[in-house]
Length: 378
Image (tube, helix red, strand yellow):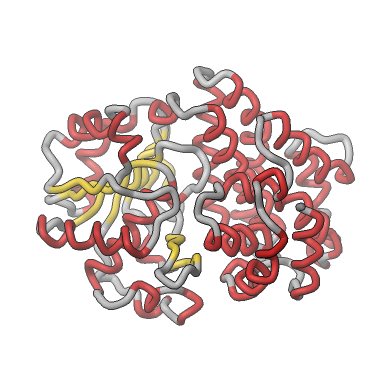
């Protein structure tokens, strides 16, 4: 497989974990600290990683929660400092990768984590002093391995984005071998996350044809493979397509996301037990329908291009196809099926309006618009 050098170095392919030793050297990391979770560790992936490194890491933090939070960032940062590490290897799903990025910030800069949230003006406070990371995803969804953001729940309950070009990992090692043991429901949920990235970033209005091309190709691969990867987890080609599509979605979303993610971030902050990818799948039909009226969507025939990438006969079928696919791979298709109460809607709307993804939606959504999207998703 070839080396992709887009926003960062990406080693892609089966067995590419073996490149870790060389990537550590290129990143200037001599005392690596590992951030992961207990599930990944139990699968023996950390042992494979140690073998690829040719040495022991100076420390391992394996307490990453399902949604990274400020308390976990503080705990991991404390251990990082104790070990006198000089860089991080993040191994796991998006939660572990995002937690590692937050540790890279806090260990270098100190202070309260909210200081570095984009909505708190934190972009300029994240400097080149941020510790280097190498990202090794074990799921095919978030694309955090090539993203410039970390999504973290603060102590005050807000789910915020820490964004900076200095958060982009020095290298991503995307080895589909590491996703082969992913259970069907996680394959489905993380896969819909990747699909949401491709669709939403393509609809974002800013001018970025390279990102648009990457998003459409990522959508083509993921839409064609998600059912097969979920139903036949040993299908190597489907796993490879999902892995590269997840990476491509995040390469593209440097362009921006939209209301799917502003809603998911807000609701996920209220109830961290809700899976982000599943929330995205539930919100997508309503948001896609809402954005049909965007001038860029109409002028550039964006919905026709989405339909073509999804293999649909008509762009009118997109929302129905997303709901149908979500159900067929075993995920809930409504907030009510996820146990969400309407009582939280006002809090979700407030959070969505403040979220960084709100600003890059193709239509400026109002509180009433968000209420309608929530109703449609219920």
